Structure formats: structure tokens, C-alpha cells
Image (cartoon, rainbow, N blue to C red; front, top):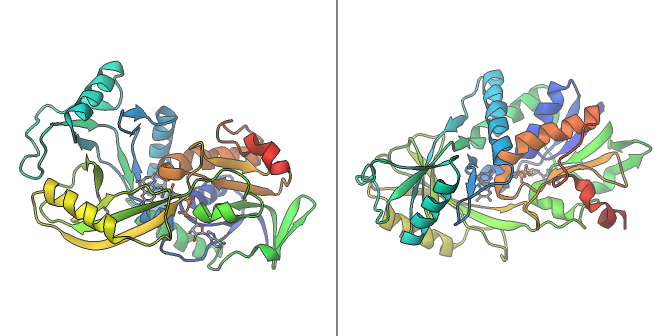
Length: 352
Ligand SMILES: Cc1cc2nc3c(=O)[nH]c(=O)nc-3n(C[C@H](O)[C@H](O)[C@H](O)COP(=O)(O)OP(=O)(O)OC[C@H]3O[C@@H](n4cnc5c(N)ncnc54)[C@H](O)[C@@H]3O)c2cc1C
């Protein structure tokens, strides 16, 4: 089999990369083992321009959000699948200081942060003492719908192998690679958190962290917004189902859900939401985060048939569309990659 690109991984990165390569008329084969505990399968798929306790604006939010919106809506149209929604976020302030921080940031800059006129509007559903504000636009991309739909397309085109990728079978040639019976111009690794063990890229500063979330069913909650009070409460694609999370753990023994997180979320929910709810699942995965919180995008400085598209951290749904397109434009037309994301910023480390 001869293809232009061999792609390892079909999380949000491998999905967006293959989507944009197809737009350029390039052929590819995706290798992905079917695992359930991967970051894209556990994520809420939230796209939020605001981050942290000080309500800072996320890196490149002004560029990434419109690009994500146009990419996901054109995928919806072409795939005949509704998976992308605008769900502005109602932030219930956990303390008077948080309220103050929100108002200060809102007064400094006009985008994204807004006061909510009727402060009692959510009283019927939530307990909140210190008021609320609205962050908009915020979107959710339901990856639980997008990923399997794209996967069945890949199956249909004979462009997917469901198996673990094994490095010992990869042969680098002069300007191309081979893997078993496959000949490709280049191989691009989109392996998520397992990328830190990739022999080509193990020296770059991955800083993986574990995230957990709970899925609840709550028929009487209003599903038109995302809500936040300490944790996020995100309406899911399935009716009356909400995603609640997440944790950020840099020290962990394994990638399994923990009783401590479950209890912490139950306590929060019992003090926050008024309608009854039922816990239906508890999920955990390792996020492919990086030390400087910037993605890894581009070709290896020493092996130009080997590339990486990884390091999305907490923001895969926002970052992946823009940087997948940028990587494809780089591969096909030689256009530059944003320096903060370009893997060549690690040329020295990768050349040792
Ligand atoms: C609890 C939690 C909540 C999150 N919430 C959000 C959110 O709301 N919004 C947001 O933007 N981000 C969120 N994230 C982060 C987001 O999930 C990641 O940034 C993103 O999913 C990373 O995608 P990826 O494609 O790089 O990796 P992955 O999703 O891990 O995909 C990698 C794929 O490669 C495959 N693979 C790896 N190695 C091999 C191999 N050797 N052989 C074959 N296949 C292989 C895996 O099976 C997998 O399918 C969250 C993460 C967690 C854990």
C-alpha cells in the first residue's frame, strides 16, 4: 500500500489532521488501537476563551475560536452530523473575590466576559451565594459523536488499521518511511499522552497530567448553558446527561478513576444543584500537556519524514483545528508554523 501520510492516532489530533489532508487531496492511512481511556474520549469538548482564577484570555483565543467554529461547522455540513453547539457559560462565583476578579477583567476588556442581568434567574436549579456572570461565546464539540463518525469514514475508505503501532517495524528511508506493507512519504505521530514515550520525541518537555470527570443524568436541569462553580457542568450529546469535571493531577500512580475525586464531586453537586441526579459513569485519562503549555507541531529537525502533532494539554478541541490546518499547509505548501508551536523550537534537544 502506498500513501502520502501514515498517521498514528485518531484522537482529535489525528482526526483533524486527516480531515485537512483530505481537503488537500492527500492520501493517508491512520493506525489507531481502539482504547477507551484516551483524552479525546474523556474530554468535555469545551471551547472556552477564558482560563484560570483571574479570568485571563486563553492563548490565541481571538484566532482559535473563530477557526474552530468554522472548521467544526463545515465538518457538520459535510458529515451530515450535528455535534457542535454554542453553549454560553454561566459562571457562579465561588467567593466574593472571584466576583471581583470577574468584574475587574470585564471592565478592562470588552470581549467574552459579561454581567448577567437577572442574578436570580437560576435560583430554581442552583445554590449560589455570590452571583454569576456569563462567558460567551463558549462552544462544545461532542467528540463522542465526531470521532466514531470520522472513524467509520476512515473504515469505509480503507484508511484505518485498528492495531497498536510498533516502532520496531518502522523503517526510515531516504525521504520516506515504510511500515510493514505500507510505503509513505511521511509519518505523523498524533499519539496523545503516549507520545512522551515516542523514541523520536521523548526528549521534548511533555508534562502529562491526569484528569477525571463524572457523568450524571439529571432530567430537571436546564441544558441550554454550560455551568461552572469550582467544577464545570457541561450538557452532553445524550439527552439529560451532563459531564462534571475535571481534576488536574500532575502526580498520579495510574490512569484509573479515584474514589477521592468521586466523593469530592458528589459533595460539590449536593451543595450546588437542586434537582435530583444520578451518577452514570466515572472517567479518567492522561492529558498530553506540555511544560510551556504550547503544542508540538511539525517535522523532526533531524528526520524530515517524521512529524508530530501533539501537546494539546487542556485545550485539544480549541487548538487542534487551527494547528492541524497549519501543519497541513506547512507539509503541502511549505507555509510557516506559529513559532511557539513549531517543534523546531526544540531543534537543539532533538539533534543531540
Ligand atoms: C478529563 C479531561 C477533560 C478534558 N476536557 C477538555 C475540554 O473540555 N476541552 C478541551 O479542549 N480539551 C479537554 N481535554 C484535553 C483534550 O482531551 C486533549 O487535549 C485532546 O483530547 C488530546 O487529543 P490527542 O488526539 O492529542 O490525544 P488522544 O485523544 O489521547 O488520542 C491519541 C490516540 O492515539 C492512539 N494511540 C496512541 N499510541 C498508539 C499506538 N502506539 N498505536 C496505536 N494507537 C495509538 C490512542 O489510542 C488515541 O486514540 C480534557 C482532557 C481530560 C483528561
